[in-house]
Length: 286
Ligand code: AMP
Ligand code: ZN
Ligand code: FE
Ligand code: FE
Image (tube, rainbow, N blue to C red; front, side, top):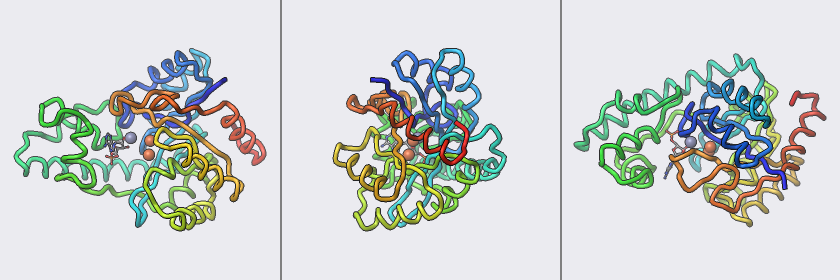
Protein backbone atom coordinates (compact mmCIF):
# COMPACT_ATOMS: atom_id res chain seq x y z
CA UNK A 1 0.00 0.00 0.00
CA UNK A 2 1.28 3.47 -0.92
CA UNK A 3 1.66 5.63 2.20
CA UNK A 4 2.19 9.29 3.09
CA UNK A 5 3.16 11.30 6.19
CA UNK A 6 1.59 14.76 6.40
CA UNK A 7 2.97 15.98 9.75
CA UNK A 8 6.72 16.23 10.38
CA UNK A 9 9.22 18.57 12.02
CA UNK A 10 12.76 19.44 10.96
CA UNK A 11 15.67 21.39 12.37
CA UNK A 12 13.89 24.55 11.21
CA UNK A 13 11.91 24.09 14.43
CA UNK A 14 12.26 21.35 17.01
CA UNK A 15 12.97 18.30 14.87
CA UNK A 16 16.50 16.96 14.52
CA UNK A 17 16.71 16.19 10.77
CA UNK A 18 17.74 18.81 8.25
CA UNK A 19 14.80 19.38 5.86
CA UNK A 20 16.57 17.70 2.94
CA UNK A 21 17.61 14.74 5.08
CA UNK A 22 14.06 14.28 6.30
CA UNK A 23 12.71 14.17 2.75
CA UNK A 24 15.39 11.66 1.69
CA UNK A 25 14.53 9.53 4.72
CA UNK A 26 10.86 9.67 3.70
CA UNK A 27 11.81 8.42 0.25
CA UNK A 28 13.95 5.63 1.74
CA UNK A 29 11.02 4.63 3.97
CA UNK A 30 8.95 4.22 0.82
CA UNK A 31 6.60 7.15 1.42
CA UNK A 32 4.98 8.71 -1.64
CA UNK A 33 4.55 12.15 -0.06
CA UNK A 34 5.68 14.01 3.03
CA UNK A 35 4.49 17.32 4.48
CA UNK A 36 6.98 19.45 6.37
CA UNK A 37 5.05 21.24 9.11
CA UNK A 38 7.47 23.06 11.38
CA UNK A 39 6.23 25.16 14.29
CA UNK A 40 6.02 28.88 13.50
CA UNK A 41 8.37 28.84 10.51
CA UNK A 42 8.47 28.04 6.80
CA UNK A 43 12.24 28.31 6.58
CA UNK A 44 12.78 24.58 5.97
CA UNK A 45 10.42 24.34 3.02
CA UNK A 46 12.69 25.39 0.14
CA UNK A 47 15.36 22.83 1.06
CA UNK A 48 12.72 20.16 1.57
CA UNK A 49 11.14 20.84 -1.82
CA UNK A 50 14.49 20.76 -3.59
CA UNK A 51 15.21 17.37 -2.02
CA UNK A 52 11.76 16.15 -3.03
CA UNK A 53 12.43 17.03 -6.66
CA UNK A 54 15.78 15.23 -6.52
CA UNK A 55 14.56 12.01 -4.99
CA UNK A 56 11.14 11.97 -6.64
CA UNK A 57 8.65 12.24 -3.80
CA UNK A 58 5.93 14.84 -3.27
CA UNK A 59 6.73 17.44 -0.64
CA UNK A 60 3.80 19.39 0.78
CA UNK A 61 4.63 22.84 2.12
CA UNK A 62 3.17 23.19 5.60
CA UNK A 63 3.45 24.67 9.07
CA UNK A 64 1.95 24.05 12.51
CA UNK A 65 0.51 26.88 14.59
CA UNK A 66 -0.33 26.69 18.29
CA UNK A 67 -3.53 28.28 19.54
CA UNK A 68 -4.83 28.88 23.03
CA UNK A 69 -8.04 27.52 24.50
CA UNK A 70 -9.41 27.01 28.00
CA UNK A 71 -8.28 23.37 27.63
CA UNK A 72 -4.71 24.34 26.82
CA UNK A 73 -3.00 24.54 23.45
CA UNK A 74 -4.69 23.21 20.32
CA UNK A 75 -2.62 22.91 17.16
CA UNK A 76 -3.58 23.84 13.62
CA UNK A 77 -1.82 22.59 10.51
CA UNK A 78 -1.61 24.55 7.28
CA UNK A 79 -0.93 22.30 4.28
CA UNK A 80 -0.15 23.39 0.71
CA UNK A 81 1.13 26.79 1.73
CA UNK A 82 1.83 28.98 -1.29
CA UNK A 83 5.37 30.06 -2.23
CA UNK A 84 4.49 33.59 -1.16
CA UNK A 85 3.61 33.54 2.53
CA UNK A 86 4.04 37.26 3.13
CA UNK A 87 0.50 37.37 4.57
CA UNK A 88 1.68 35.00 7.29
CA UNK A 89 5.29 36.08 7.71
CA UNK A 90 4.66 38.97 10.12
CA UNK A 91 2.66 36.72 12.40
CA UNK A 92 5.31 33.98 12.34
CA UNK A 93 7.98 36.54 13.19
CA UNK A 94 5.88 37.77 16.10
CA UNK A 95 5.39 34.21 17.41
CA UNK A 96 9.13 33.49 17.15
CA UNK A 97 9.97 36.74 18.94
CA UNK A 98 7.62 35.72 21.76
CA UNK A 99 9.27 32.29 21.81
CA UNK A 100 12.63 34.06 22.22
CA UNK A 101 11.38 36.09 25.18
CA UNK A 102 9.88 33.02 26.80
CA UNK A 103 13.07 30.99 26.30
CA UNK A 104 15.03 33.68 28.15
CA UNK A 105 12.57 33.63 31.04
CA UNK A 106 12.60 29.82 31.23
CA UNK A 107 16.40 29.87 31.33
CA UNK A 108 16.24 32.45 34.13
CA UNK A 109 13.90 30.18 36.08
CA UNK A 110 16.30 27.27 35.58
CA UNK A 111 19.20 29.47 36.75
CA UNK A 112 17.08 30.38 39.78
CA UNK A 113 16.86 26.66 40.53
CA UNK A 114 20.67 26.54 40.63
CA UNK A 115 21.14 25.03 37.16
CA UNK A 116 24.12 26.18 35.12
CA UNK A 117 22.57 27.09 31.77
CA UNK A 118 22.64 30.14 29.51
CA UNK A 119 20.43 31.35 26.69
CA UNK A 120 23.49 31.28 24.39
CA UNK A 121 23.80 27.53 24.97
CA UNK A 122 20.13 27.09 24.06
CA UNK A 123 20.45 29.13 20.88
CA UNK A 124 23.61 27.16 20.00
CA UNK A 125 21.60 23.97 20.25
CA UNK A 126 19.04 25.21 17.69
CA UNK A 127 19.75 24.78 13.97
CA UNK A 128 16.77 26.83 12.78
CA UNK A 129 14.86 29.96 13.66
CA UNK A 130 11.98 28.51 15.69
CA UNK A 131 13.46 27.75 19.12
CA UNK A 132 11.63 26.18 22.03
CA UNK A 133 11.61 23.84 24.97
CA UNK A 134 13.11 20.83 23.15
CA UNK A 135 16.25 22.91 22.57
CA UNK A 136 16.39 23.83 26.26
CA UNK A 137 15.89 20.14 27.05
CA UNK A 138 18.85 19.26 24.81
CA UNK A 139 21.14 21.51 26.86
CA UNK A 140 19.87 19.98 30.12
CA UNK A 141 20.57 16.49 28.75
CA UNK A 142 24.02 17.40 27.41
CA UNK A 143 24.97 18.81 30.81
CA UNK A 144 23.72 15.76 32.65
CA UNK A 145 21.01 17.68 34.54
CA UNK A 146 18.43 15.16 33.29
CA UNK A 147 18.79 11.78 31.61
CA UNK A 148 16.47 12.29 28.66
CA UNK A 149 13.92 14.61 27.07
CA UNK A 150 11.03 12.96 28.91
CA UNK A 151 12.68 13.75 32.24
CA UNK A 152 13.44 17.31 31.11
CA UNK A 153 9.75 17.95 30.44
CA UNK A 154 8.57 16.08 33.53
CA UNK A 155 10.86 17.82 35.95
CA UNK A 156 11.36 21.28 34.45
CA UNK A 157 9.75 22.21 31.13
CA UNK A 158 6.34 20.52 30.99
CA UNK A 159 3.12 22.00 32.33
CA UNK A 160 3.82 20.68 35.84
CA UNK A 161 7.56 21.31 35.62
CA UNK A 162 9.46 23.68 37.91
CA UNK A 163 10.46 26.06 35.11
CA UNK A 164 7.26 25.94 33.05
CA UNK A 165 6.02 29.07 31.36
CA UNK A 166 3.17 29.28 28.86
CA UNK A 167 3.86 30.38 25.31
CA UNK A 168 2.18 33.30 23.61
CA UNK A 169 0.09 31.83 20.81
CA UNK A 170 -2.73 32.78 18.44
CA UNK A 171 -6.46 32.61 18.96
CA UNK A 172 -7.84 29.56 17.09
CA UNK A 173 -10.04 31.72 14.83
CA UNK A 174 -7.09 33.85 13.82
CA UNK A 175 -4.86 30.89 12.98
CA UNK A 176 -7.51 29.18 10.86
CA UNK A 177 -8.44 32.38 9.02
CA UNK A 178 -4.82 33.32 8.32
CA UNK A 179 -4.05 29.94 6.79
CA UNK A 180 -7.34 29.94 4.91
CA UNK A 181 -6.63 33.33 3.38
CA UNK A 182 -3.35 31.95 2.08
CA UNK A 183 -5.21 29.17 0.32
CA UNK A 184 -3.84 26.46 2.60
CA UNK A 185 -5.73 23.34 3.57
CA UNK A 186 -6.35 23.86 7.28
CA UNK A 187 -6.45 20.79 9.50
CA UNK A 188 -7.02 20.43 13.25
CA UNK A 189 -3.88 18.62 14.37
CA UNK A 190 -4.17 15.62 16.73
CA UNK A 191 -7.61 16.56 18.12
CA UNK A 192 -7.56 13.65 20.58
CA UNK A 193 -4.19 14.43 22.16
CA UNK A 194 -5.68 16.31 25.10
CA UNK A 195 -8.54 14.55 26.76
CA UNK A 196 -11.43 16.97 26.44
CA UNK A 197 -15.12 16.16 26.78
CA UNK A 198 -17.13 15.31 23.66
CA UNK A 199 -19.09 18.50 24.17
CA UNK A 200 -15.97 20.66 24.38
CA UNK A 201 -14.50 19.03 21.27
CA UNK A 202 -17.71 19.56 19.35
CA UNK A 203 -17.93 23.25 20.30
CA UNK A 204 -14.30 23.84 19.44
CA UNK A 205 -14.67 22.07 16.12
CA UNK A 206 -17.65 24.29 15.26
CA UNK A 207 -15.52 27.38 16.00
CA UNK A 208 -12.84 26.10 13.64
CA UNK A 209 -15.30 25.11 10.92
CA UNK A 210 -16.98 28.54 11.11
CA UNK A 211 -13.62 30.10 10.28
CA UNK A 212 -12.70 27.86 7.37
CA UNK A 213 -11.33 24.54 8.68
CA UNK A 214 -11.05 22.01 5.85
CA UNK A 215 -9.73 18.83 7.47
CA UNK A 216 -9.17 16.85 10.66
CA UNK A 217 -5.94 15.02 11.43
CA UNK A 218 -7.52 11.66 12.15
CA UNK A 219 -4.35 9.60 11.78
CA UNK A 220 -1.61 10.53 14.26
CA UNK A 221 0.99 8.65 16.28
CA UNK A 222 -0.80 9.40 19.55
CA UNK A 223 -4.29 8.47 18.32
CA UNK A 224 -5.79 5.12 19.25
CA UNK A 225 -8.09 3.30 16.84
CA UNK A 226 -11.02 4.67 18.85
CA UNK A 227 -9.61 8.20 18.53
CA UNK A 228 -9.36 7.75 14.77
CA UNK A 229 -13.01 6.68 14.65
CA UNK A 230 -14.09 9.79 16.62
CA UNK A 231 -12.17 11.98 14.16
CA UNK A 232 -13.64 10.26 11.11
CA UNK A 233 -17.11 10.72 12.55
CA UNK A 234 -16.49 14.45 13.21
CA UNK A 235 -15.14 14.89 9.68
CA UNK A 236 -18.13 13.11 8.16
CA UNK A 237 -20.64 15.20 10.07
CA UNK A 238 -19.02 18.50 9.03
CA UNK A 239 -18.05 17.51 5.50
CA UNK A 240 -14.33 17.77 6.25
CA UNK A 241 -11.45 15.84 4.69
CA UNK A 242 -9.04 13.72 6.75
CA UNK A 243 -5.31 14.25 7.15
CA UNK A 244 -2.69 12.21 8.94
CA UNK A 245 0.92 12.14 9.95
CA UNK A 246 3.43 10.86 12.47
CA UNK A 247 4.47 14.20 14.04
CA UNK A 248 8.01 12.97 13.54
CA UNK A 249 10.63 15.02 15.46
CA UNK A 250 13.77 12.93 14.85
CA UNK A 251 15.66 12.07 18.03
CA UNK A 252 13.64 14.64 20.01
CA UNK A 253 10.85 12.04 20.02
CA UNK A 254 12.96 8.93 19.57
CA UNK A 255 10.08 6.44 19.66
CA UNK A 256 8.18 8.11 16.81
CA UNK A 257 9.37 6.98 13.39
CA UNK A 258 8.69 8.69 10.10
CA UNK A 259 5.58 7.33 8.38
CA UNK A 260 4.76 4.69 10.98
CA UNK A 261 4.77 6.57 14.30
CA UNK A 262 5.16 4.05 17.15
CA UNK A 263 4.92 1.31 14.53
CA UNK A 264 1.23 0.99 13.84
CA UNK A 265 0.47 4.24 12.01
CA UNK A 266 -0.49 4.03 8.35
CA UNK A 267 -1.67 7.06 6.37
CA UNK A 268 -2.98 5.72 3.05
CA UNK A 269 -2.22 7.52 -0.20
CA UNK A 270 -6.00 7.82 -0.63
CA UNK A 271 -6.04 10.33 2.26
CA UNK A 272 -3.57 12.46 0.32
CA UNK A 273 -5.59 12.11 -2.88
CA UNK A 274 -8.81 13.11 -1.11
CA UNK A 275 -7.13 16.27 0.19
CA UNK A 276 -5.97 17.07 -3.34
CA UNK A 277 -9.47 16.43 -4.72
CA UNK A 278 -10.94 18.78 -2.12
CA UNK A 279 -8.44 21.47 -3.19
CA UNK A 280 -9.19 20.93 -6.86
CA UNK A 281 -12.92 21.32 -6.20
CA UNK A 282 -12.16 24.66 -4.51
CA UNK A 283 -9.93 25.76 -7.35
CA UNK A 284 -6.83 25.68 -5.16
CA UNK A 285 -3.42 24.56 -6.49
CA UNK A 286 -1.74 21.33 -5.36
P1 AMP B 1 7.36 24.69 22.79
O1 AMP B 1 7.03 24.86 21.32
O2 AMP B 1 8.59 25.40 23.17
O3 AMP B 1 6.19 25.01 23.68
O4 AMP B 1 7.66 23.14 22.97
C1 AMP B 1 6.65 22.22 22.59
C2 AMP B 1 7.27 21.05 21.90
O5 AMP B 1 7.96 20.27 22.84
C3 AMP B 1 6.25 20.13 21.28
O6 AMP B 1 5.98 20.48 19.95
C4 AMP B 1 6.92 18.81 21.33
O7 AMP B 1 7.71 18.66 20.19
C5 AMP B 1 7.84 18.91 22.52
N1 AMP B 1 7.37 18.20 23.72
C6 AMP B 1 6.33 18.50 24.52
N2 AMP B 1 6.25 17.64 25.55
C7 AMP B 1 7.25 16.75 25.38
C8 AMP B 1 7.71 15.59 26.09
N3 AMP B 1 7.12 15.18 27.22
N4 AMP B 1 8.78 14.93 25.59
C9 AMP B 1 9.37 15.34 24.47
N5 AMP B 1 9.01 16.40 23.76
C10 AMP B 1 7.96 17.10 24.19
ZN1 ZN C 1 7.37 20.08 18.04
FE1 FE D 1 1.28 19.59 17.61
FE1 FE E 1 3.74 18.67 15.39
